[in-house]
Image 1 (cartoon, rainbow, N blue to C red):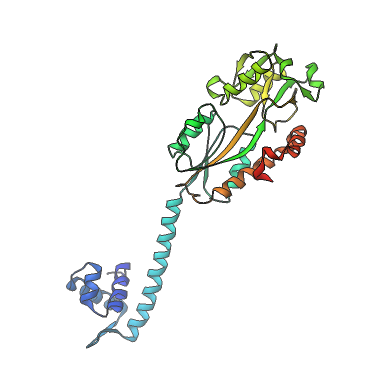
Image 2: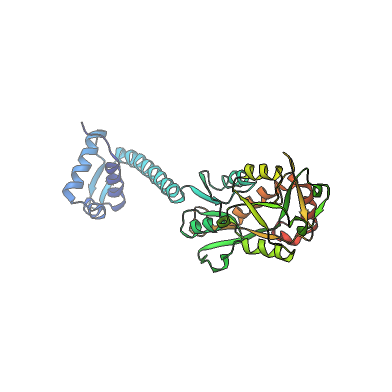
Length: 316
């Protein structure tokens, strides 16, 4: 036995709106006999005539008005459902690209308030993150300034500087310099340094320049991008540059460098064709809130932060 289908409801609604089977058939792209057959099927299923044929066209009967009301309700709800589904499909997941950072999980949590489906891609290199951003493989990105960044084509991308962050230094807690509140970079000239692999050091030129200004070439003895390994090497006697919010403990201490000779810009970027298009300011707010959450990990950095609002003007 035939069942009532959406096409039947659409036929009833269109006949009522056009007042004519002929015009309704044209609008629906059907022949008049085909539409008449659909109407007869509906009338058979609901048990009565839906339209009276008059000189003024097709006029709904009492039963026709009831069926028409239900048809409009069902078709409108179906249209809304499909619109919502298309919108969800258009938005899709929000892909977040990021270098390893201490506040990564907090950024993801914030982005979920903008789009429930957030997925993350973490890469060791800022240049690689920007490659993915330019290719549309990520929609939102957080990365540091890197050599060659100014030559990148960032058309279609909203870029904002999150903060200018000073580099601190990580020392073994047994190092005599660990007793100082502030360390001169020149005093680290004879130390073994732990750094990421050279292709992952974004501001390599800036790092070597800071050391050159301090009168030495750093002895880059160990290369690792894994934080716990780097901390273990430092605890064993090496030194390394450290992100400002890094925490003292587990055999190492984090100390500020006199004069803050190495400063790094951190950026937030949003593609204009992303699921959060037009909401770059909200993306920035998520990153800013996440960054605030780690400030107190390093009390010395917190003091510097409070004393240098020019390094984070958009937070003020």
